[in-house]
Length: 471
Image 1 (spheres, rainbow, N blue to C red):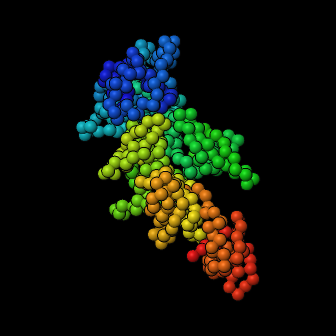
Image 2: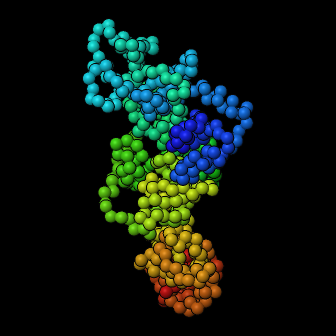
Image 3: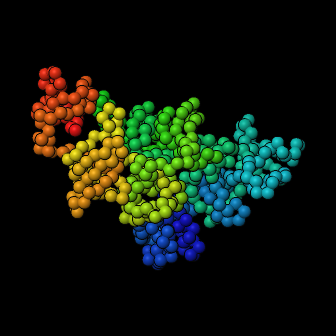
């Protein structure tokens, strides 16, 4: 979007074929560029760096030669906007041979059809000749045109092509259907899928000394093409940096997923069955809005942008529009607006979570900090906990106001001081974990890790503090 807008403003723009999102622009100053951008695109530009004339010449020289294989977008005439594969980048006079799904067919087709050439529709006889490699037929020639596995071969001038680092899978669907250069297609689809890899996902290493090891994603560095995985060796955790091309995402039955390409684009559901590379989903067709305390994007959430001009960027939500359709998130030093429907929330694993054996691990006196929602960043001491409704009230340390928030919106900073529980010595407490779960007991003493209680009718015993709750 930025490159296209600048070209319309008559800037000379070169798109990097190797680093996604990097542009080279010939201009008098960064201000001349920024002044020409509308607000929506102005925020998308993170940094302006002036390069020397020598570097500029090097960029232009390297950019004249398009790598092979590679993806390009045709910028002019009938095939404008179409994604093509580079077939031969060494033609004279700066021409490049590319393969693209045909728009014109040598037989009757509905207007605007997009399809591969169907050779069965061509006449029999000498008018059609094979293109072969060895004994394998890979295409045909007909009426002066050459077709490779249904794709049309076209010679296009270098200036009419724009390199594409990683096209969307839907934009190369006919290329995938053709199967031309399967190794390159497989690499492209893998690179596209890896754009959606997020912190917390499980991944398997498929190459190198650590092949077959499975770990959890700790961080991603898309510009560098790497990811950090947390692995376990002999019970010890170790973080290792792995190239994105050397791992594969692992899905499991029960995972909540969203379809990112194909006819079911946007469908969300739970995995109920997996057979080889085919995944069966149970789609959530409920039209009810999820409760904001659990599912919806809130201020303070970490999000990833899945589609649109800011795809691949991530940051912290700083503001939500009143109608709930847009959000502003901070990406490095910029605040960027995007539609809420284009983002995915990254769960905050530090917030208090409900467990079957202990419920919510929070009590009056604990110090907590609000991690998401309108009260984001508020810190204070818990005054009361409403477990049936999963909410708590805290006393804000800044203005001493009482703030009511969902329990799942907060992070525990520290446990309550033991001094606050001295009043409970000699009183009845509840055993909520361990071998005596469900019993009542009398509290006699406590330390930083455990306490002494006596179950009614029994001798005194020590129990971990986490397994005891007061009234």
